[in-house]
Structures are given as C-alpha cells and as structure tokens.
Image (cartoon, rainbow, N blue to C red; front, side):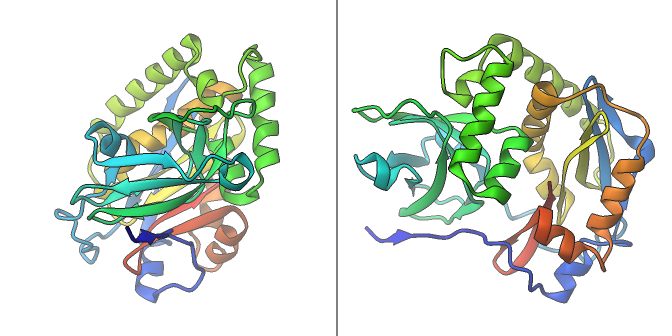
Length: 310
C-alpha cells in the first residue's frame, strides 16, 4: 500500500488575496462582546465582509479525528516494535471517502504509549496510509503489546505551544511532569490520565458547556477567538470563514479551557493586553513577523484557511 506524508506546513509566502482576508480591516475584534467564565476570557473575532470568501462554504467539510475514530473511518497503529526508532511516528489509515483534519495537540491513547499529534495533517479520501509525526505524553510506558488507540482529546494550549514552536520531546516531558506534581498525580506519567482526573474532567465539561451555549447565541459572523486568563494571553485562532470556525470550536474550547483550569487565574474584563496582542497579530505590517515567531498558518489546496497565535 502506498504511504503518503501530507502535512500542512505553514509557509511564509502567501497569495495576496488569502493574506488580505486575515488582517485589518477585513477582520475586527469585538472586545465589548467578550465571554468570560471563571479563569477564561474569549473575545470574538469577526469578518467585516465575507462576500468574497468562497471556499466552498456549504460544501467543504473537514471531519475531526474524534469523529473519524468514532465512525471507524481511520485506523491508527504503531510503525514498529522498537522504541527508539518509532516513538515519534504513527501510521494512520483513512478508509473512508471523507476528508479528515487531524490537528496538532490532539491526543491518542493506547498503542505502546500515549501520543500527541505533532503537526496539522489532512487525510484525503481513499484508502491510504499516512505517516504522522507525534510526541510521547506518557513517559514511563512502552508496552510489549500494542493496545488499540482511542481518541484522547486535546492538549492544553500551553502544551500545544511547546509542540508547535519548541519541537522538543524533553521539554514536553518536563512540562507534563510539572503539571502532574502540581495536581498531585505523580502515580502516573500519562498526561491524558491527568486530564481524565474526575475534578479536572468535570471542570473542563462545565467550561465547555458554558462557552458552547454562549457562542450558540451569537451571530454567525464570528471567525475566530482570542483567549486569555487573568493577565496572560493564551493564544488566538482565526479562520477563513465562520463555517470553519464553528466546525472547529469544540476543539478550540477544549484546549483553552484545560489551560485555564490547569494554569489560569480569574478572567479580567480589562482588555489592554488582548488589544496589543490582536494588533500585532492582525496588522498587515506586523503579522508575518508575529506568526514567524509565535504562530502558524494552515493551508488547504494552496489557500490559507487558518492562522494561530500562541
């Protein structure tokens, strides 16, 4: 079977049209409509004119890894038996006729040890095998027998920043060890097990439920969010259109809610830091350098469909 390695690398060279849709004045940040719950503050980003944003708004659908695993569309397996050679890759087979978007920071549990996806990857329709880069999030386990992989949710935004910008397994383990100690979960080395802790899982569900309810009441022109906790910016995600935003919203909420629970402080209604951050990210002159240092771009079929800031 032919193996395909297809990762959406975030190139700096862009088509002018695509770039122009991700800067002021095509976008504006609605600070007055910020949604706050406990440690998390989410500020909507809206598009001023979507008339030129075609991108098959009603026809293009990316299914999530969670959905694909639930429906049995994909199969995930280890590349081999040897730890040193195979710890940082998995084989994923798309057996469906659907397009599946796997995002960096998504976790899969089982196998010979739990992993987190290390790069945004699109699985095209058709029976093909993809070699996917991953990091280990369970330092102490390498099982003799491979267990079936299951969907493990999303890593918090802080951990995703390490995955996307630091690219270092040791740094990832160091952060996981810190979180395990901080939350008195040292009996296990698994980050996924930490997030499944009853208290953390219940808090995450409460956060996500609240924000989903709030965003369901908003108009459909929202294409992104800026997330913060206390006086700290957690990141931002902005999409080409509202369809892609709402399609991805559950995963976005998951990573930001977990970060707010694990490392957050009470949300603030003062938005000076968020405004400075947004201006740097969305200004045409400063955006390229901003994304080069602390962000990424995601493309599909040559079109820019998402920018992310850390």
